Length: 107
Image (cartoon, rainbow, N blue to C red):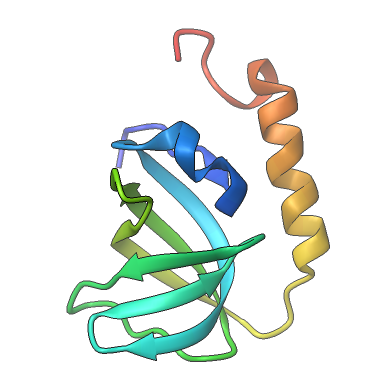
């Protein structure tokens, strides 16, 4: 994947509609082809058939933010159950506060 995928949490969803992003959150519910992820707030993830999420585990989701603020999952990576979500939120906030360090200036 050559496209830049900014790290976000739920509060940043609205700023990234129609873009591919990364979000790290805890799976709180699975329902058919959808999952609810707690990533600084609840996010509805639209799963693909290769998504094998586990309730209670942290997953990094690479996906596209839809207009309705759901995220269409492209890739899901299991990070287990030992994640410090306060640290995750601090990293996300830092990447948005200091964009010039983390992303190309052309973006």
